[in-house]
Amino acid sequence: MKNYQFLVFFSIVLLIYSAINYYIYHRGIQSVPVDSGLRNWFRWIFITLAASYVIGRFLERMYLSVFSDVLVWIGSFWLATMFYFLLAVILIDLIRLSNYFIGYLPSGWLTPKAAANALGLTVIVVLITVFAGYVNAISPRIKNLTIDVKKQAGSLKELNIAMASDIHMGTIIGSRRMAKLVGLINGLKPDIILFAGDIVDEDLAPVIRQNLGESLRRLEAPMGVYGITGNHEYIGGAERAVRYLQEHGIVMLRDSVIKIAGAFYIAGREDRDKPRFSGKSRLEVAQLLENVDKNLPVILMDHQPFNLGNAQAAGVDLQLSGHTHHGQIWPLNYLTQAIYEVSMGYKKKGDSHFYVSPGFGGWGPPVRTGNRPEIVNIKIRFLPSVPPVSSL
Image (cartoon, rainbow, N blue to C red; front, side, top):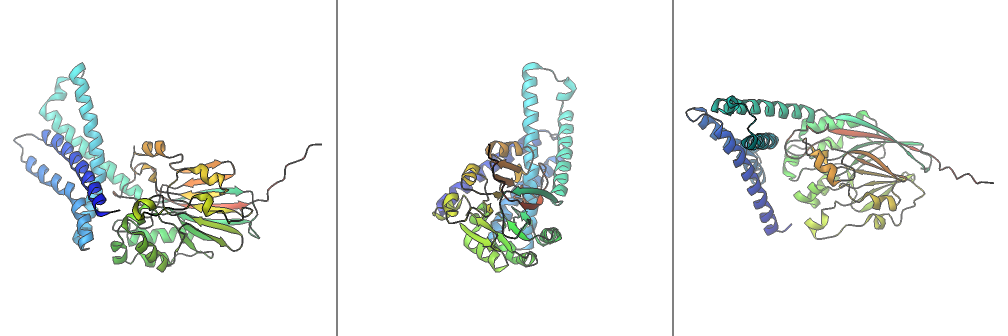
């Protein structure tokens, strides 16, 4: 992305972010009694929280330090808190507006004391929600899935896959969370490990500083560890991210296909955002698989789950994707459900199987209220295709 495009994009995002925060602040300060000493506390705490994420991410790019880490952590929690405050303020304003026309609220609910009580209750509910979302975010589950593929894979009868997407290694997903990831995956004793994009969270510097790549070296799978690029690898610089991941034991598939043990294929697409960041196109699924023997099983990794029908038409047996986070924070899951054919979970189209994971890590706030993070344990059973019975 060219510098001027980035500046335009950043300016728009900053303007929207500032407008949202001003709206929340304006409504909040109105609920604090004028003669209360809490108004100054409210003002400065709010400004500090609202500015922390922007300042922290800026400092990360200038010089990594404990101070920038603290600001990013505070600001990341504020993103979730801000979102739920926004929903609460919109709801309260809608109630006030309808009451203006209908007049159904008791007069006691319209006093300054009632407004202060509503503010206090809102803060408590939002903080409890965000805390519960954090606990959920650091408690990944193992999702088990068994798939029957009607193809033979040499001498293989079954394949045990450990798959994860959207790890987002960086300041938030650090050494402790990576140790948990490695421990859970190795505990599955997989034949092969697949990472379906967004392994790195934009900036590579926090990953290098925490030496998170060493965690990846501890992954164990006899058939290897494979990954693809996601949009976040491209946001932070795909070439550096890919080189780092390859140096730490991950075979990165970039519009490429590899045959495993003479039994099946693993194909990996470049991320859908590659043209936007590099100016270069990526291969279509049919082009990627044109020299593949379709008599053998074909597993495709494509980070963003768009145009599933193309994979089906190209003869893909299993496609693994991520990217959606299934909204990550409720009720954004309803938005991702409207955008994607599969926002989370399993779907079968013809003989093609699809699985979209909500991811192991997360982007922005270290909070999940719409779903649990996961590692997917997929067992593929290779079954000989049964010829149709001829009628006499």
